[in-house]
Length: 482
Ligand SMILES: *[C@@H]1O[C@H](CO)[C@@H](O)[C@H](O)[C@H]1NC(C)=O
Ligand SMILES: *[C@@H]1O[C@H](CO)[C@@H](O)[C@H](O)[C@H]1NC(C)=O
Ligand SMILES: *[C@@H]1O[C@H](CO)[C@@H](O)[C@H](O)[C@H]1NC(C)=O
Image (tube, rainbow, N blue to C red; front, top):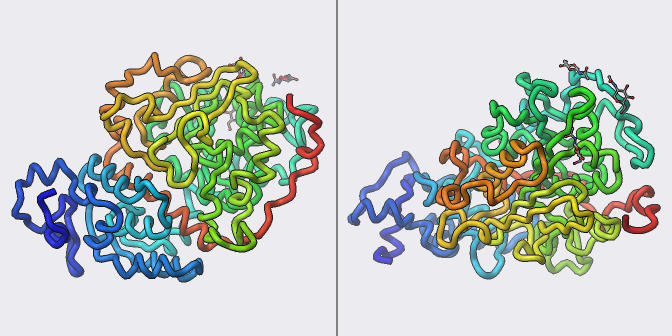
């Protein structure tokens, strides 16, 4: 590296903001070299903090576990740089999250915000973004969805399904059906969000954007009340209902494809396990960054890494996603460690900052295939050629714009469901891109910005507990694995 740190502060390939105005400050360095190398991205997290002038902020964040204080500090972090290219985004995210030893997620989010990789909403802070989140595409109150289902879906679609605890009107209102929806002329694709998020924002700048207008797909998404922070078993009711509702409102012979992010994958797998009717209605399941074994980082996410009580206080769904929760144990013991429908998992072995482990056969995303329905586990870095952008750094949200994710969703849809097949797509060509063709810098930044918003939701969520919600009677009653 030819730059000293003070130089960098003024002239990285990121355009550095001055306090008063945004300005690209001239550097005494070959501009082409600066452009291609992504200097800020080449730094390790600590040095990046210095460059961005965030040393004090990082220290403060390291010293507090109080959610309100953390949110105040994060609200005060303004973007001090403007990323200008996708390689630079990838390198900068790697410098923040790719460290060998896991670091404090809140200091990392501060770095992300400072590096201009946070939510790009006109300078709004996290508190304002969260306050406006439930409007429009994230509404949980879509109360005009049609009720003309071709077969019963509530209180039960079939004998053997678990009972619903949520009233039907509320389950139906969580489904957002865009005006362009064709009710079965094109195959419906149900988009299921993850913890601390709503389906509108999760997929709006990546897979939904790409699928909208496709001849192969008709995207619809779920906005689960509580942003997926409440009991994951209840979140699964929304998934189970949406699968049966969509397939029935689209006619009598219409299957659904499910694409999920994060906890949405776990909830879908729980829905398949305890609402068996849903299995016959799903042609293909493509979970992105799922955590079928939970995550060993759940503790740290709850700001309670060294709490004497172990977990908490923590959102119910986050305690359930602890590696050794009763929820995870119940799902896996009931057969949920294997696929029920053709399944293509998509995840990043380097480096998912939320779900760990996420590499090899121990990856939380890795599903077995005891029923022989077809499972393809796609760890991006194992499928993309070494050294290609697609084999480089991707975080928990980054997999939503990984070029293989979109290509395999389309491949599965174009082949009438089943799994996506890496031998049918141009792996080398796709992996030469950092983001799926059709997505630009703004989309990538909006997607990367999901993580700061997610943590903001976590810091403000009201229902914090020390123990996970009790396992529902229907799941307890299940005699043995099928
Ligand atoms: C749809 O199929 C079910 C059987 O699965 C049948 O009972 C019902 O009458 C059918 N509805 C329509 C509208 O064809
Ligand atoms: C339900 O209504 C929608 C229009 O609101 C229509 O397109 C669809 O075909 C109907 N579904 C059934 C199963 O009749
Ligand atoms: C719907 O999905 C099920 C389960 O994956 C599959 O067996 C069935 O053939 C599919 N039906 C249609 C009409 O595609």
